[in-house]
Length: 392
Ligand code: ATP
Ligand code: MG
Image (cartoon, rainbow, N blue to C red; front, top):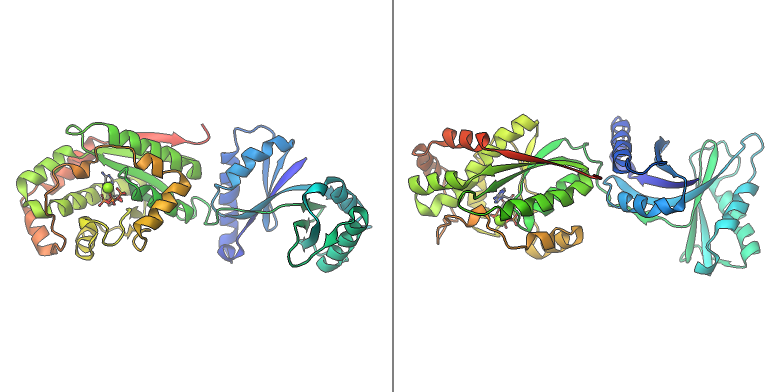
């Protein structure tokens, strides 16, 4: 039997939250691996163990762990049972010697953690004893500060685990521990990165996209579907709402001065999103805004847009540069999808000189002439939705 030992960060786990946190992570890993027969996921004290019958499962498990938020690090481990009535390290030492990748290192060190303190020797005693044995058997040297290979030993209630590697996980918090939020997804570079960052902080993200049909093609919708599909690899199930926005924009164009259109569009998006969030029981709205990037993201316009909803608007990219956002988009794989050409509804009816410093009283005055409630109702009534799951 092979094992993956999964570690999470202690700080997130203080006090009463610990059980909830562990349970969410175990649940996530079980769902992420449910298509793999013969794999078992269990919570042990302070870590999670995944058992699997063949080493060939490792590629998939590794891929899964590197995408599972809440995981700090993980290793491919094997185990031997420990008899605490006559505890000795012989079986462990021999097993390590049998499995050690002899050709891959010159120097090594042993690093032991005891979750089970009944064992009479301290962690350091075990490091020394196993280290001395391996030196003798392999003729390799010990180097405590910069070894080629670290041998990790973890002593638990009935067995000892050993591993020759430890890989970093993605960090963050398990999906679901941060409640549900609704992300406004445009198909651009920024909003998928914003969604990713909220999933990483433990949120379950639901998506809404406003499209320009019937005036524009389906291209932006297809792109957003691709992006949501990609992000579903991190949260395993997603829902995307698609709202026709072309007619609503047209009403705004006909009823309000050109320079403030962009802000009015955004406020309408926020109102429709707020309605959807209530149905979904989402506690916040997420956007890909980055301060000063475009006209709708100036300090003044951000304030005026924020006034259109009672929900918190989460803007995880607000302090990031475009270059930083782009790098993140590349590393999660959304960049290539985002730069595919489309027809975003924001490009529809955009005035040549949008106001970058709109004032709330002016905006409210302009909205008096529009059927705001009617537009929200219209948007909600014409909604279409899609569900995404991973693994399929
Ligand atoms: P992005 O790269 O995410 O499109 P952007 O730099 O193009 O961002 P804007 O077009 O001003 O900036 O959009 C700011 C934010 O408003 C987006 O990140 C997104 O959250 C939301 N948004 C804009 N257009 C749409 C849309 N058509 N559907 C849903 N949300 C949108
Ligand atoms: Mg955009």
